[in-house]
Image 1 (tube, rainbow, N blue to C red):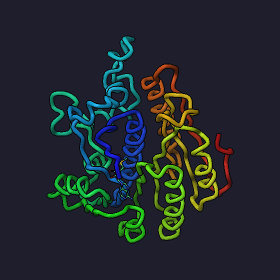
Image 2 (cartoon, helix red, strand yellow):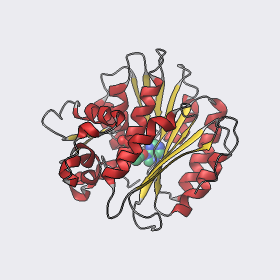
Image 3 (tube, rainbow, N blue to C red):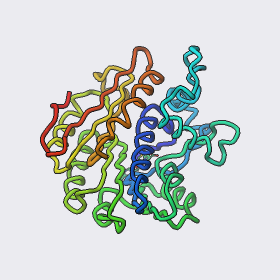
Image 4 (cartoon, helix red, strand yellow):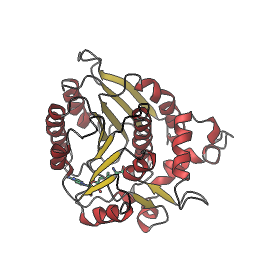
Length: 300
Ligand code: SAM
């Protein structure tokens, strides 16, 4: 367990993951009835961008900073106002975090982003295995009765948390992939059991893209899962052929809201424009499974 998200908070992968999370929470809030969020790999909840860890990699500068200051990055005069509404609202929510009054100092992780978007009746279960990270989470949410922190293995804990009493909501699975390809098999087994216990839940799984061949078996597995719909959203800032670095990342969204591809299309285009590195970034957005359970296009 060497992974610490403090080194990576706010990077290009977080931009994709957290803007999709924001959009999913918005979709859940289209109904008045409460929902539950279960974050199986929660991290510590909030990250100081002036920390030694964030400074060491500087990854947030090629992530969140590029969206906040597109004209600075590209010198082409495009300002935040030209971003699609979803991204503007997401950035506004990050800048509205106490501590960010004078600019971007803190980057909220998935638990804090979700908690700030949740209503009084919504609830969150946060699983984090590392004791220090779990302790930070507990401190962050000590006075929020909507949020429950579990210092547990998120894969194991998930079973007992499903189905949530609200009967609607979202499971976010965002592991560090330290076990590499074995992590995918663990996710598949977890999803299989979870879908049996709660077939109507939304499940959003973040995955890294280094070499495309490492992800393919998981995407194929998803095509034959029992989810009614599976949407895949990917953003690549480098070619997907090197095992040595994070070239891009994806979100697989099981039981995604029916029009969710339309919600993500423009934001993905904008992210690709602003986050591209040596060459134009690439993005993919397609249904791996459509309503009848029939496989859509074979994943490329
Ligand atoms: N979801 C967080 C966010 O978006 O802000 C980031 C999570 S980070 C990528 C992965 C976290 O999972 C790390 O904090 C790590 O300690 C934790 N972790 C690793 N294995 C775990 C497990 N089996 N169950 C729960 N947490 C685990």
